[in-house]
Image 1 (cartoon, rainbow, N blue to C red):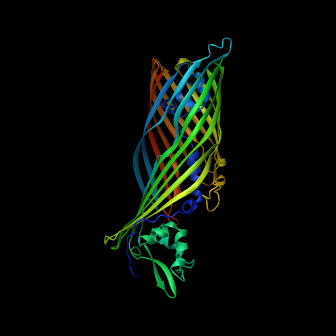
Image 2 (tube, rainbow, N blue to C red; image 1 turned 180 degrees about the vertical axis):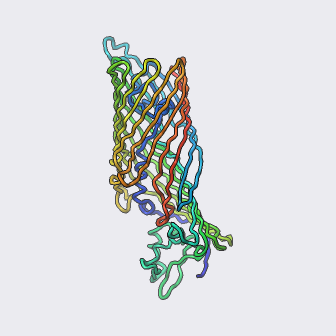
Image 3 (tube, rainbow, N blue to C red; image 1 turned 90 degrees about the vertical axis):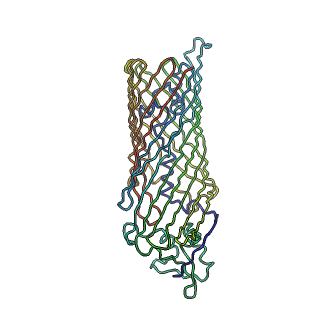
Length: 502
């Protein structure tokens, strides 16, 4: 085969989001954007995130706003967090481990308290307004794997260049014969990766019989092909919350909040394939996707004290409609031994679309052990099956993805205990998250264990909590037809919260 190598600067075209994103990926995005983890201050995370029936904490602004009714002074707090990730992956039987770190300030806020002394004779005692930002979900995660095709044969049916050649091969394995070079273009555009392979010289058009065919080089037809990929995910779902809670007769606490949701998600996939030959050194595919959005929802809640030592709480968060923008940049670099390297890029500006974060309902109870602490527990129901994607601008060429068949409602359980001795606090918590995927789709197995310590004196508080969030990742593939990658992640986090009343 004639070997023709050339360099390309930049190719920018637009193609539909559905061209590179299958429905399974939409399902995973729906879960990613809908889930909430143990978020808030170090105190509440140390309790496993259970906060439906507790109050007097900045977390109440973003959790159950009725908890603001427990404040008797104004206050502020801020919570930086340091995360460490341990990531394990298996590709074609090859195990790989990776580690990473992430530093953020995902929570902070202020509350402004006012007593209703001017309303003498009324049983409404006080009201508290709060404003806070809170990262409900962190997307921080890494999948790092490696594998190989030994002599072209193993679990991986064909390499990346073979995959880019598939649109030009008949079902019987023979090459498609095109009447002209121009006739080939629609098939190139149907697969953006084939187009990139052609622009970087990995695929070529050549005369064959009375027409033309698309063929590949033979640089990896012999020997081994090594494959590696690193997938880095960052960002999160963050809310700016404006909430108000009121105290009625020290028995009933009511609250409501406006939740302005922001989604910022970045996924960078860097795939490298290295054949054992003296023509192509390696190829590297960098696929970067950025999704951003904003929308508004509301939360209402109540906490009731049937007796002094018991709190019972409920809260409801409405569905949230998020307007989404997405851009994807795909770059393919072919590094040849003769130094005639080639590079091409495709930029995909996806038309705007929307996503609906599903509703959730929480209930909880707290039992106080005199002045020595308390035990608290929550149950939360999330209707993942009601998550929806929609577009009036044609973002989904194959029709709007119906993710509901692959999702189900789920129950999340949170349990926490706090012990008190003078100014000192010690806490432990556990959270078990129900599987958001429907039966036989995927089992996520997500849970969080936590523990922490704190002090409170003269209106100043300092709390430090350690938490470990463990979960399985949905299977991914480097390209269509390749072996799937199974992986699991363990995210350790140290969160410090500093606060002061005023």
